Structure formats: C-alpha cells, structure tokens
Length: 636
Image (cartoon, rainbow, N blue to C red; front, side):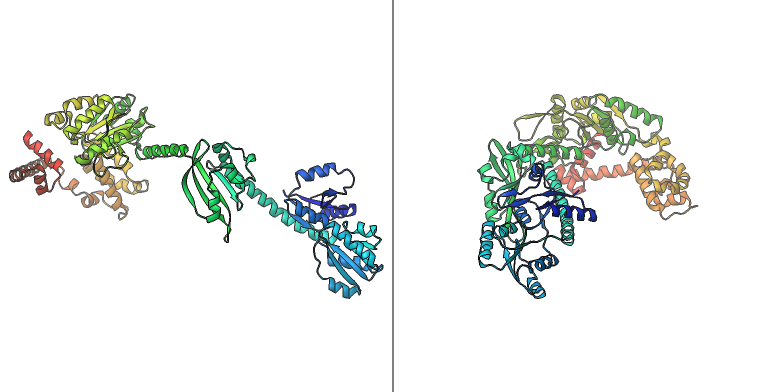
C-alpha cells in the first residue's frame, strides 16, 4: 500500500494534520521537524528515531508546508506535496496584522495570487517577499525594522527574524481545509507513485530474468541499468558501476557513438577483458532528442551453443517417428503375430529387412520398431531410394564437403546417415539403389563410418538400419537388383508384412477406423451393404487402397441419407468392386496381353536407340523404370 508522511514544523500542525487524516480515513505518519538549507533542524522531543526513519525510508509521498516543503523537494528524490496557503488563511492573518500596521509584508517560498484583491477588501498594502535564502531574508526583515511601520506575516523561517529585529509579526497558520486539500493531492500522488514503483520493480525483475546482458546509460553516458546477466557475463558487480561513466567500466565501448549519432549497432563483436561478446546498441529517443542508449549482449560462445541446440532440435523435429505400433490396426492372428515379432525386434539393435507388397505399411512397422527401441529419443530418417534421382541419392545419403562439386553449399552438407546419428535410418525400396552405391552402403553397415563426397576425413555414425522392399528376397537375388553381400548384411532380422487379402477379417475394423468419427454412424449401414463385395475384392493396393476407398466414401457421404443402398453407392464410387467379382483370370489374361505389347514396344525402341536414356525419353518413362523392365525381359 502507498504511504504518506506528513513532516510538520510545529506541534499544533502535527495534531491538526493527524486529526484531518483520521477524519478523511487516510493513513499517514507524522514527524515533527524543520528542514532548512543545512538539513534537519528544530526537532521537537526525541527526534532520533524519526530522523533515522526519514533518512532510510520516507514512504511514497511527503507532505509539508513552507520552507520545510521547499527544502524537502530540493534535497530528496521523492514527490513532495506543499500545503499551500489558502486565500482565507491569508485574509485571516492579514486582519490580525492590520491591528499592528496597514503595511503588511508576507513571506513565502512560492509566489501567491490574489493579493491585490485582499488589499482592496482589507484596505491595506501588501508586499510579498519570496524567500530564496535565509541570510537574504534576514537582511530584508532587518531593513523593514529600520524603515518601521511594518507587520510581517509568515512561517517558521521569517517569524524568528521578525522577533529578533522587533518587527511586529503574525504566524501564518494552516486551516483544516488547506490540509484536507493537500492530503487529497498526496493520496492521489501516492497511488500514482506506488504504481510507478510497482511497474519499475516489475521491469527490473524482467530485466534481471533476461539471459542477455543489458546495460543502459543516460544522455551523459552514465550507467543507470546493469542487469544480473551483465554482472555474470562481465564479472562486474552492479554496485561498482551504477552512476559511473560507461567508458570507465568498459573502455572500448561504442555507447558514446550511439549517443552522438543515434545510429544502431547490430550484432557487433566486442572483447571485454577475456570475454568475447556479440552486442546490439540502440539509442533511446524521447521523440525530440536522444536521452540515452541501451546495449544488449551475449557471450559469443553461448550463441554458438544455442545455434547447435537449435540445429539439433530442428533435426529432431524434422526427422522423428510420429507413429507407433498402436497405429497398426488389425485383430487378425497374422497381424498380431507380425506386431509381436516387430516388438521383439525392437528390443535388439540388429539390422532389419522388411518385405511386403506396396501399401501394406512397411514404414509404419519401421516407425513402430523405432518408437519401441532404445533409440526412440533419437531421429528417425526415412529415405525412399526409388523417389530420389540417382544423381542426388549419393549426396543426400552420404553428404558432401565444401566445394565437392559445382553448386555445393559453401560449408558442405551432412548426409542422411549423419542426420540419423543416434537413431534409425529407414531405407525403403532398397532395390532401387544403384549397384555401385550399394557398395558404399555396405561399407557404412560394416564400419559404421561415413565418408562425405569430396571429403578426406571419415565421420563415425551410430545408427540402426531398417531396409525394405516390395519384392521377395528370392526375387531380389535372382534378378540381381541387390548385391548378395549387401542383402545378407541387411537381412539379419526378417519381417514379412502380409497383404490385405491375407487378413480380410481386419477389413471391417479398418473401414470403421479410417472413417472420421462424425461419419461412422451414417456410414455403418452402407458399409454393411458393401461388405460382401469388400471381402471378396483382392485389394492389390492393400491397406493404402482401402484407405483411399474410405476417404472416397467419406466424401460422398454428405450426399447420402438414411435408407440409401450401400451397393448403389458402391457402383458410383468403386464400380470395379461390383462389375466382376471373379475377374482374376480375365485380369491375368489382360495383364499378359499388355505385357506382351509392352515387350514388343520396348524391343523396337531399344533397337533404334543408342542409349538407355534415349530409349527412356522416347517411351516417356524414367531411366530406372526402363532399366527394371529390361531386367524383367531378360528373366523371361
């Protein structure tokens, strides 16, 4: 709460001030004493305790009158409310003074208004003396004594001199109304002062909580703010610097330049003793002129550390496994068996080879294994070897050194194996990796070391490798799509993911889970109608195809209403499931015809082309796709 201290020059005023404050319900502390040019004087009674308190803590606002108020305001850094002399107070005193003389001299520390009107009312002549110093006041009163026929009206500063020189005098008392008006102003000012103190304390707490060092100076370059971080970084105590010139504390500072030219200094290196800092300096402008400057800074080593932590956090955010075994849906015995086996594999750190047709969830199993392993807190880096162009695959996997090739980043780039350090790297479509690059991968698996393109030094990596292909191991080895030595290095633990047509009992559950929650109730009867067709369909795209089907179904549900036929809707959104349930033989025959036509076309183009690239361009397919088709033709 705000505190008001009333400093009273005499006892009667003390009692009156306390009485008025009690009447107003305002809590004040009253001290009796006079402050003059030479400090405290004229204390009544035992003033030692009061003097001690006034010297230590004066509260939020001081209230006093006359010379004491004047000198309190000049000597203390606190707001002071002066008990102003009211017109009725002056009139009352002048009426008393008129009994001694029609020439009245009023002494005051600030000019009064309305004296001319009082002269007219009372028929007197009033002269005002504004007190600037006590010696000068004494001289003026001594002169009045020489001239004679004057009466002095004033307070504790002038009355003793009037008595000394025999000049009639009237003490200028303060009325209850005047004190009440002063206390009202003091109460409002105390509230404002208290709130300002709270804001200042809060700001100081915020500044001291900052991890950056903060130094602020006034327009003369004197330090008026020096937070805890600045103390810690520079090894200087705040008590040693507040009020001193900043150049005395930091000789090579540029704060004086900011004060002079108002220019911003951003991200500049500076050595302060044995500490190198990165600092920002900005001017403080009140809208018209520069009134100070502030510098914020950190140790350069700390910034490097933060950058390293940020890079690590970004890597972990970018390369992390989002899915677990809980995301692998299904209650069929075969899928439960595969999940149990995968959990067992997760407890080991051995290399895993996952096989399964496209759309069965090979990466989902890989993420689940990573999440259940001791590497769960590390990165999970998934690489589709078939999706990256061969020209980029090597640099993406192994990284490159500075200047390794035209267009290389200036500081080089870490490869995905390095990014996976401490975690798991998942190599999908491993059979799409060129044979020569498979040799480099084999070395990484054997040595757990990576050599960047164009670099000389090797980089050790701690990774677990999970590889996957939609081709069976036998097919991979027979066709030569993968090196035997690499395959056996990868195939330490083997996990085969079943296609959807081997776990059709999971289709109802998958359909329900794939649909949005707010769609399930409406979709339930429709799916029940469709289920015989869904269960007989072969699902060549596996779970991914079923997911696409449910998304398509969800899209059309908004146009459905209760009682609609699921079979009719199926004819619209998936006619293949309706038209021919038993078209396997027909499909096989059709595929054979297409394959034969494709073989003839490829053979003709190859005869006319000089390179694989030229043939692929004429056929409008990627080189890797053409290469695979050529391998299949050779197998036949």
